[in-house]
Image (tube, rainbow, N blue to C red; front, side, top):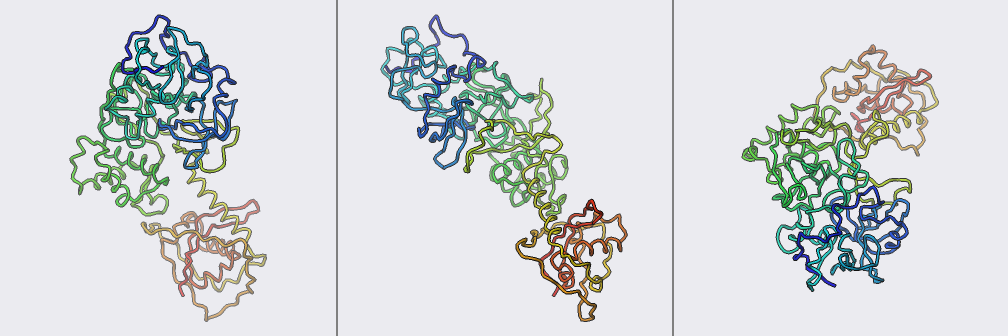
Length: 545
């Protein structure tokens, strides 16, 4: 039978549910408490539509089925792979007996008959579907689409359809939720729930990407499912006062909140970090380019009239005046006009309209941006999560970039130690007096990449060097190359030089490199358990000769 959704009325049968069945009674929101029945809907090699954390469906093929955790491992068309919960997978018509895809019951008697979707072929009891299918539509021969198919045909990036029959059907679907909101278990900040159930669609979500939180019910909603956007969202843009259709008992309410210049810089740097997957950006060439290109999408209100020539000065002042929020490249010996977020976390609105009744938000950890993996499947013990990933130990939380730098430094230190020659220290004739480096250091010069020696090449056997007047002494080194030696300022200059000579003289012919006038930078110093002093040295790679 086919039915007309447009003829759906608010009146409902006598035996209808007053609210969706609580999530706590079932493993999934659709009410299937029989794992065997639920698993029978899926099989390896089956083509399905899987809802991703942006609220949209993507075509994929089931590779594995995990009955214990109610999920399937799906390979998508672009060969990316991910675990997807059963509740977020839409299958086609099985071609077998007519069943309700929610309760798996085949009984079909008034006032709770099974209605077949004209798009996906799935059947739904009138009382199982959300919203409930009214009896007044049963006599109609017009096409009827289930909730899943209505969302699949109307949701899109930038916001759902606003006009047309499908848009009207979507608005009607959004008057109710397919789950019991009060049964969701939230984290302390009310950003993630353990059921991974968000929005009107009930799918997964990442609050820190393109989602808005309803100011009344506090649920998060996908950009793709919201119909009231005038401009597409930016990642992590929460500068809106939003009320969902359920709370507003009709169309959604949306109001843009004002932004300060530090908010503009923060939001733009956050988006750049999500898009380009790096931390630091040139304040003029990259940051301002992004801001100018997205000036209309930022919807800046009073700031929107700022002349293009004056914007950079305002942004630069905001970057330099909020050091607790922004990190300059000069802090890590990079160019001073490079800036990044000290903690990658989207900015929070300061509007009193949103802050009433809320606790102040603190960005205590990095946001880890997830995606579908194009490599091997995750380990079987891993869990599916759509929230913020936190480190196991708070005091050892590092970003991937930081961990990579620490690993590279430790590997180079190990190479310096392992490549040492067994012979004793070289003679000191090639070591001229080195003056104490000045306290001020030049900024803005790009660091050269570290060039650690190849561990596969054995250190050459260099004979003992003898004093010679023909060997030129290396010229004094520029102060910028000594920036790593600030760690030795507390030592006597002669002690510094002797320790440095002792540490690096056995490192792949270091004495010869210094004799040729090759410039270097001391990055770190450490003392081993047996009292040896070791240095991490970066060679310039160019000799004076």
